[in-house]
Amino acid sequence: MAPRSKDDSVHWVVVLGDFGRSPRMQYHTLSLSQQAGTRVHVLAYGGSNPIAELREASNVKIHTISEPAAWMRKLPRLAFLALKVLQQVLQLLWCMLVSMPRPDTILLQNPPAIPTMALCWLAAKRHGARLVIDWHNFGYTIMALSSSPRHWLVRLAQRYEKFWGRRGHAHFCVTKAMQAELKANWGVDAVVLYDRPPSFFQRTDLPTAHDLFTRLAPSLLDPATTDCLTTGWQQEQLQQQSSGSTSQLASPVTVAGTKGAVQWKSDRP
Image 1: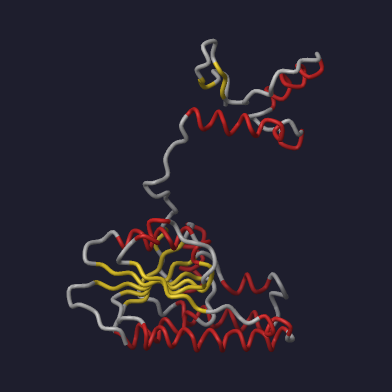
Image 2: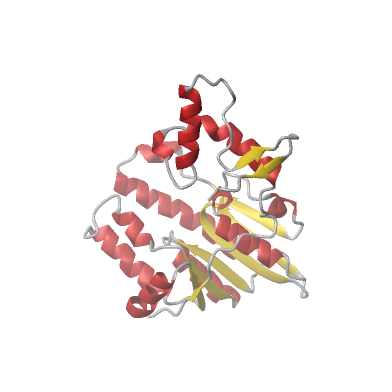
């Protein structure tokens, strides 16, 4: 097991998926990394690049596990699922029990629940860490989409998720409806943690908005895009076209003034 300084606070973020496609877990990681004396280790599949702030952070390390081999995907579904889970278990156990430093906290994204919930609980027990589960959805319901809610695998997955989900030390979820479901039917007390954009999200400036909507103008003329933003603007543009005007399509929300300065339309929604 990798050593750690006594002054460090170490947190794991476990995402059994493409970390670069999970904005919520990236922002959790970013928030943790900005705490003084903290090191964050992410355990996830590779694929898409995470945000630049995480790639450049000296106290964030991303450990990737391998996707199932192509030949495995050609196997019957049940055999593929069994081998996939076995491969995940072996890789996760190696990282959690051998190669990664002992954590203070393990933050797990759910779903998927199999096999990460049980393995993260085991790792938390082994290292004396706290297990925090961030509930985005229920894993068994996603499994039911490709089979049947009454399929024995789905029912087994539900029991697994319910059993191990209760063993987290703390819980987040994304909506009040999920919070109520977890409390009423799972015995889990979760805190609703809404997604908030990080500080690098800023209001779009006027020139950028004008350039964007001007380039989108031909597509917005499609009747399928009619909404509160484009209804009146579409009528204006179609009238100009019917009158034989060859002027360039204007933006539905901005207008160039008499001296060329761009400004917001006064009648925009």
